[in-house]
Length: 413
Ligand SMILES: *Cc1c(COP(=O)(O)O)cnc(C)c1O
Image (tube, rainbow, N blue to C red; front, side, top):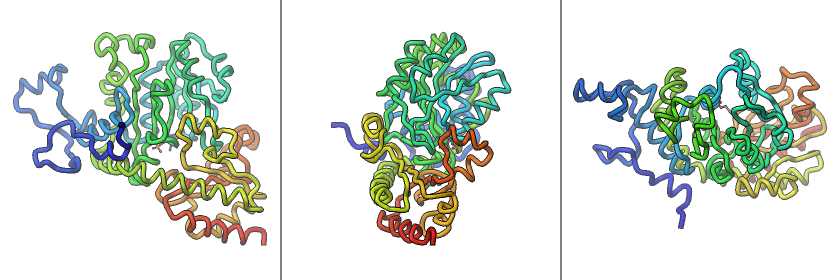
């Protein structure tokens, strides 16, 4: 029988025996590593003696975090980076070049949108934005310069869900990659490999860090893609075969752009991963309790959470995310004024922009994250001035409900 996520996470062996039999992976906060001889260090640089050399390229504590992510997900390879944005930017840089294009979901984390639409556009990489819940529309945009399809497993704050197997079938048919940002649905509830995703990227700053302890990102190569199909990886395929993508990162983009994770961060992330299942279960139970309460409240106009049976995406959430499609929900009040009045009365739920902290966090996306967009753009993105986004934490559900109830009670008085 397959052991539980938490049991497995707590019992993944270190890559090397610890000289002191330490129970927790020590924090190897060392910039460089010593070699026994000139011959050894020369052999290492020739690629013949694997060892840690310099912590920007690899580090024992970070390596252990990578090993845990790889083992827990069943991925072929894992690479940890300084942030979610480092994971996303390194992935695209290693797969594409000027003149290529990528197809991306149009509902994206804001900085990912800006990375694709501004940063990469400046270097001649085109992004074709499309509604990824419409597989035909996605397929229609593919041409011979398309390298990948990029999407977020549950979009934020719309909380839309694409049919991942349908996207994977299109990517496979056209010999391109399917890349998923799974930040909202971490490994306990989502296995990207089983659904045919080639590359998974995520911000571990959110759920995996253990509650906003540190910044981090991970790239997973599921080992499902024949790298000889990507013309930008020809050299690496010859030398590294199935490891071509990770080799291109480690020996080029990852190393040369300097977006590595530190040993201290890896220590936080390892502890966060061990407690991920516990925390997620609690947040999910809270979502169901809050959803039930909010759906019945007369001052709440609409509740969106694909984990609720009333949601149109409930079946897709069941199939792809074990029925636990992350722990972010949105709800609508009468007006922006009502939203602000409500937020100002909250005493437990914090007014902040992060996701998957241990604390419950609320924000009015229309007036904050999307304030730079025009009314028309906000409309297209489904950002209503009546909508609040709640990232549900691990407090007791009864306390959260009481806080919301008292705050709603004071709205419109
Ligand atoms: C936060 C987030 C990111 C960026 O991650 P950082 O760790 O903040 O760099 C990317 N994608 C999604 C879906 C996110 O929520």
